[in-house]
Image (cartoon, rainbow, N blue to C red):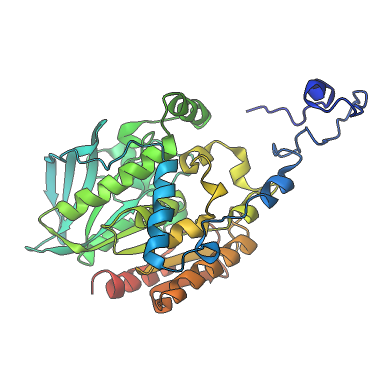
Length: 391
């Protein structure tokens, strides 16, 4: 997509004070107070960042009662989702579409009412036996790959085309494993559902994300808010299943799925533990020239209007405290600069420790890993889940 690199100050002269001098246009425009940087940031972006003081963060809160703070902060986040309140109580009305046994678990396609707007299909894996089982809600990534969503994490069993696409994705990011199948073999019930735009609910194109998000805003709603709302509904649905122990439900995701995992943990009472791999930073360290977020398109799924006037990214994730949480990052991950990861981990650490729950927060940077969720990272995550979610 072609973008204009700069905006001439001359074109903005009606917006400038009468005493401002405007230079004549030159062959190589120089960004000024009203212009843009070469990375599609306003030239005054540093001033905008300085204005973000996150007054509702736990460290800045006037109240020192944690539950009072958490309730107020969560209410602010929920308001930014642009989703009607009170909470959606539409019956799930589940329907099994198909079911196939494997040696260690059952594979089921289930359809249920994901929100008041309609139904969706999910891939559900259930261990053999009566249960109830510990469970994991899997949240798929973005990756600008829309033909598959839930299939990125659960091996598809009824579509050869999607199977080939999913296997290639798994080889690229997950050491050739399917995370959901690995968890089901360990005794977990597992659910994955497509976000709007992926798989059965798409496929979207990369260029169309802006139009989709804009249309949501024009309709008084939010694409990112809908995804957050649907994830909380999926968590509630998983917890409601008779095969599931509703006191042992976790959320797990990689990349945008990690964002979704800690977000649903912050918003949902059904999530007991969280595994978030390769999506955590502070806002100010993310909004720097060259960062992938500045491309804009994928950001629409994680853009809640105005929320950063009140809370930083790790502040929102900290709404899940003191429940157990595991955060992994790769030192070679070009999407998330280490300064932002380190600062975010420190902010979350302070919150968990303030509640005498420091042992429930695990943060790790893998020195030789990039933006991946490889077998060694998975094995640590599964062992962690066995302790904090299944135990």
